[in-house]
Length: 337
Image (cartoon, rainbow, N blue to C red; front, top):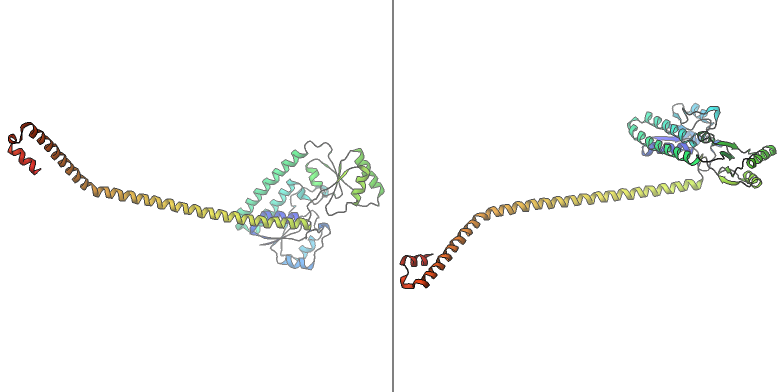
């Protein structure tokens, strides 16, 4: 099943839920700005062959209606369905673990609707990542619990859902340096509220941020909303994926070798047990066969013992009574024994 995703976060979610049961493709290439993305004729041709198109929603894909009008037979899933986006906060739903959990559930349901034969597989993957998102949510709550200054100064207001979830105050810097009043207001706010850091996106220019930081003595740090991946990040993930696949192959080969070794050991044990049982039977049979001979030998030994006893007694009598006094019957018995 071929599935297309509109942006990287959705692509990543679809890949995690669909796993090996689907082929998933990301519409936006590495390093691209999703807000500026435009559909090409090549994209339309690829989508015409797809079984499913999953998009983020919330206004992130301004071109979605054009695709729906052109490809009416294509199955669509709005990953943001059932997410509270009151006042059109922003479309970066995935930055809130709770919203991300809703998105992967929508994706799971869409995959099951098309491919019900693998329902249990998709449900199992969903359960795994839903639990991980719950763990992440709890970890973030604990990490931010003792933060006193809850102001987040950012160049791109992409963290509305994140800030709403964890009671933070997102303050976006005006991107237009030509607005001196906006610049003065943000500098005053940073100084008065003792803000320690200003965050900017990895793909945006840091010129404006550097200027404000110089005036306020605040640090500048990157904060990536994960809308897209850089080429380096994509290559890094690809390399890690290839290494993980190689490692999994090694593990599978090792498990296969261990299973083969286990089977060989079991066969040897079984053969030895069978050999021991056969040996035991042979020994018992041999003993049964030898028993009459043993009885005969026992009888011979008893007879021999009797002879020895008689001869000993006879010699004693001979010594005591002399030969001429021995009874002729005793002599005959002695000779024939």
